[in-house]
Image (tube, rainbow, N blue to C red; front, side):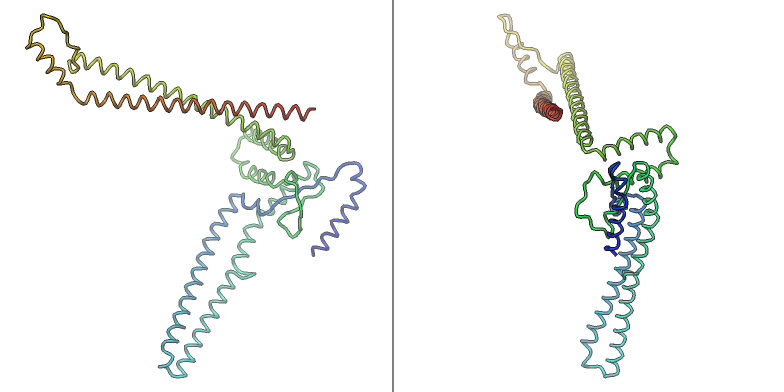
Length: 332
């Protein structure tokens, strides 16, 4: 079968030689297995089928356990049974084994329920894939499109000839067509056209990757700056609250003023000031220490974040210089 297919393929190439002299032959390929794995409807149906298969396996294991129990029981009681009873039990065990093997073959055989269900699930998707491949081939002037997962052996295949992702986008667009407005559909088609051009042009693909990396770096830098601003704002608010709390405490007399030392101060007054000083709440000192620790911790975090931002900027600058040098080298 494979030889006949290769013979037909070579014959088509020979027949197309005259046309190939005027324009280059365009060849593409798809990976049907990859496409099926990325179609949501097929994945959901396959998951349900897998649950059925697990149930079938459990039933088979249950039958096997039952048969093994009967065999062990017969082995233990064989010396006490007559020949007729032994033959009867052995016949029953053989019947159960045959029944179990038939059930296993029915569910998991070459023409079993599992294979037939998988074929039935894949058939509608395959039809849609064939239609999508024909549309893409006609729109982009492909001469041949092969299936990498079929019987045809492909010793080497360049990724830029793989149109599997384009087929998946066509299938997804078909599913979403009814849910999109005309404007959204037009925007989606424009986006897909750009993605298709990137798939067919490796240089454009690399350039797009560089642009995406730069965009991600810019977004991360903006996010870091925003976090830094929020941290500074929070630090300022904490300081303001601490100062206000200290003023309020002094106003209420819970924090003592420094004792004045002059010659007119008598001993009872000094005793009163000492008492006021020692009566300062321990909670106030504890809160002040916590605020100081929190301030030091946030200051350290801000320093680390600033250092990280500088490193990322330097890395982005180096990447930009490398890209500029690469572009200049390519132009030369």
